Length: 209
Image (cartoon, rainbow, N blue to C red; front, side):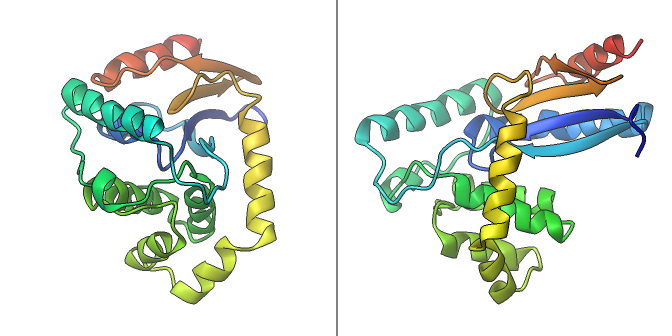
């Protein structure tokens, strides 16, 4: 890869509800890039919403996030299983899910892991803050459970996550999801359109002059 390679960096957290809402537009944007500009490399970057914690999520935070789910569903038509708030013990902890994505990346399965985590969380009312949920997700995409369990708990994977978060926080982002175009050695923030991928694609092309 040369230094003048153009990259579109997708900054996400697998437990970010707006990332789940953005998923259809993101898929459409990737398709536009594949069809019209295959010189752009797509890079997935973990943002890390919430550090490790065993503390139950406060009721106020649960209420805020539950309302956010309803807001996203109303605005975008995104499907959510709201039973999560009754059947799970929520924690404000997304780093385990982020580590799961790094392990899956090593198997060439990062995108599949993202979807498996989102499906468990938003549709099946399972808690991706829990390791057993992540192991189940890993097995569902073809990663052997013992190897995954060992990797996700390793210092090496945690160090890689911390390094990635440090690098990502140097980018011109505002929350998750975010898009950043690396073009001719500079990073440009790209506005997200949650409904029309073409709008975002046009902005990317306008910068590439």
